Image (cartoon, rainbow, N blue to C red; front, top):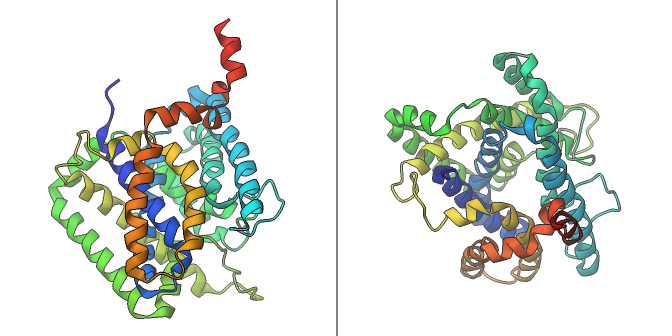
Length: 340
């Protein structure tokens, strides 16, 4: 089967942004990093989620595979990150197996989305997406992320569904390419506006970050009542992420080096699962070590380390070595039984 390099390159570029921002995420209060992080958060996980939905079309015929490649690594990395964080003290965590640790939230949320997908066929696309939009807007009032990241799961669900319902992403991009420069200019305007507003005002930095990242639900300050303002801020943030996601994808596909051909990003995109799982151990350590450096020196350390990590962790030999952590069927004892 011919690989879709559009998807690989987009995933590879997104993974670079994930690794980079995880290494500087604790310094969001600094104007430069606040701007960079808010810009990246406006599209990187939403785009990943939309692509994940697009790649989930055959989930009906791979039900057991979800247990082997999503639920199994979630359990494995819950244990590994718990042990790592307790041993190093790099992240404060509690003993709750149902509360995803660090970046593990995406794995369990992806499992839950795919668990629900087979039931979409009983409803129209319009009914599903519109219902999920309403649920996304209201969910912050009654759920949080302490149990299986349920708030993130509901908040991002419309984007996953949109990706799932896209029949052919390449064909969609070709149709949208008629307005290519509109998307490219829109993306540049979005990047500039989000960075400038976040950089210029600390309160705006905080508000934009709150709008774009559903880490906390609406009751984040333990207020007695949910304020309409909070709901509207999140709605504006969600609409922004949808627009920035499509602008990002069309912009990527407009770059000759990334459009439908193998590139330096392709391996990172193809093997993004290993990069995602493993980089967190390094990122947590780096975050704890660069606090005394200037912003420029932090950038000098983090950027090449990001590129090196993405390159190293996407090597085929690394994937082969770590495969038992990502796929239950690749456990040595199971592989030996299958060979007999």
